[in-house]
Amino acid sequence: MRELQDAMGGRERYQSISREQFFSDRDTRNMVFHAMLVGIQSAIDSATDLIAEERLRKPARYRETFEILGENGILSEPLTRDLSALAGFRNVLVHIYRDLDLEQVYAILHQDLGALTAFRDAILEHLHDRSSGNT
Image (tube, rainbow, N blue to C red; front, side, top):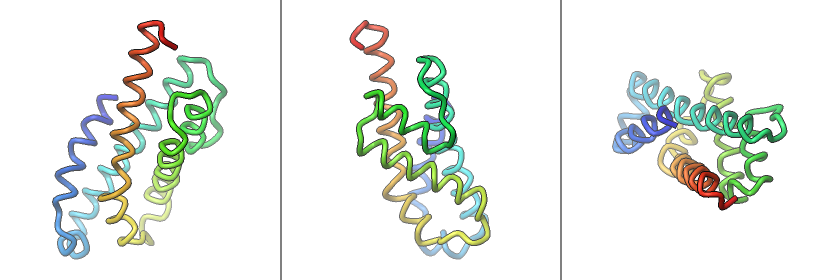
């Protein structure tokens, strides 16, 4: 969760990068790609840890980590859908690096990464409820 928090802190800084700079400066894009990858992977890792800790069924794919948490009432259905999409985007970042749709990446940076904040909040709430005996 600490890695996720750090990555989310950088999100605001990266969102302030102008469209022109993002599209024209490869180093800037690489920095943003890396930060996005770290943030999404941190959420996947946190979800996987929680699944193991709670002895839920084992995911076969990254997307499934969020689906499992959704099935068990830890994440809302809309958040599960958003995070599953980000897990799919993580695969695109890793495997289709040279052919990335920069318009899509820029849009995700500005619109979709908020799901990571919602994920963090949902997990912290779940852990608090669990420790309080409310689950």
